[in-house]
Image 1 (tube, one colour):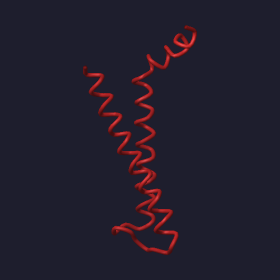
Image 2 (image 1 turned 180 degrees about the horizontal axis):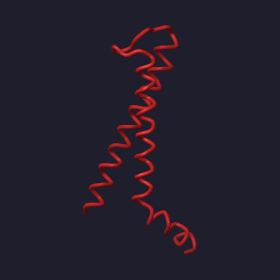
Image 3 (image 1 turned 30 degrees about the vertical axis):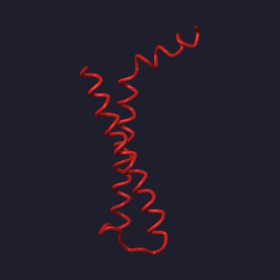
Length: 82
């Protein structure tokens, strides 16, 4: 049961990271391309930093997810043989 709880936490954090990456990417391409200086009080550099950090965080959560599911991933070839 502890592993299930950990998986839920990791997957929720990964989803949060993905939402932030997606949202900050849209903000940088849509609002700053039209010449805006700030958006919600943050400059393009601030949004880039948020985008960069959240991208690394999301990647770490995906890697953690894969590590936690390594047993299942390792079993896939055996499932294909049947």
